Length: 168
Picture 1: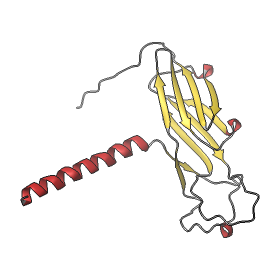
Picture 2: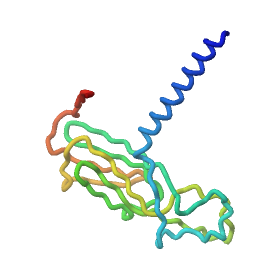
Picture 3: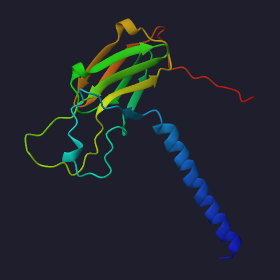
Picture 4: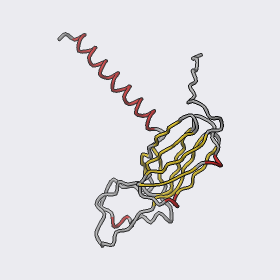
């Protein structure tokens, strides 16, 4: 293998890795959500935690969403485990679904020490852009098995919209 072949292979590999990271950033950037611990989050005292990497004020988690559009509605499914149905506030603001709430730390009855804390706790806010106008006053929500499902009827029923945008 000559040096030019090696150079082309490395450039191709680097291009693939770079594109993969760009795709991941585009895809996950909206799902990466900050959790801000507050007075009611009920986190354990720092003195009872041995996890050197735990920073209670820098808690992040992925709140993934699936968004379905059909002729009549939009349906959002958000993975938000560890809450009760009353822990959510759900709003439609402009052209976005806004889900906020607080995930509280649940204390264990044991007197042991926490070795690892990787779950996110605290108040959060997740904004999901909506591709079509909806009738927010007719929305329905349910929460089961850690998945929040929000059904939003469209203002104007019809097929999913596709818009082509010209580059200037």
